[in-house]
Length: 111
Length: 111
Image 1: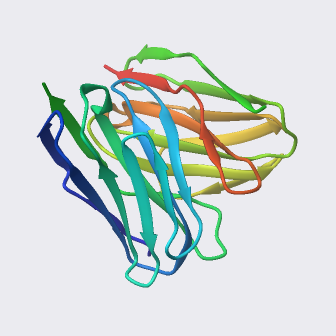
Image 2 (image 1 turned 45 degrees about the vertical axis):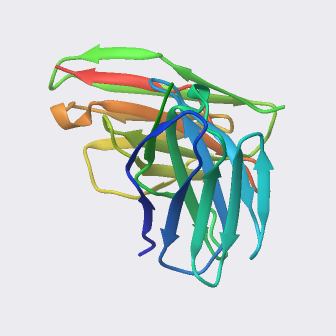
């Protein structure tokens, strides 16, 4: 059974600071996803990582994938209040087509 | 482009009442469709997925069922709701390549 673990589960940070969210998974995978969810809203796709060493950046967010370590990171640079949300990673096992989600990281950015 | 509609947006139902949630998609044919549930403050749990009309796979045993009467329609049902059925229900569509898109969701409160 594929397991996906995120940490931390909750993160409170000051504006302007940097931080990293970690996503570990338990089986071979060739696709990893990061989503954002605002309170009461659906999921918004942020990144799709398709290969070992993949790195993608959008604004203050940068995601990377290490398939050998079964680890993805979502790095936040110089956080701003608008980044406050819950972030989920999700994994598709090799040759599969279903997402298994991590438990989510609730991010609060304080002024 | 692909669009996912969910109806209704919110629903309050008493315990023991029936349920019918609808998901329709536009802009694609023969999509893979998924139902997820998100309990308050929790991650996403895959409930059902469908690769075609009349083809339903269940991921967890429960008092819910799903049907796919048309290519672009996916319905989640229950004959008798339980308190534990409360949550945010999300329909999702696989684009056939690398992206899974989510609908706006239905918030169900069972009282």
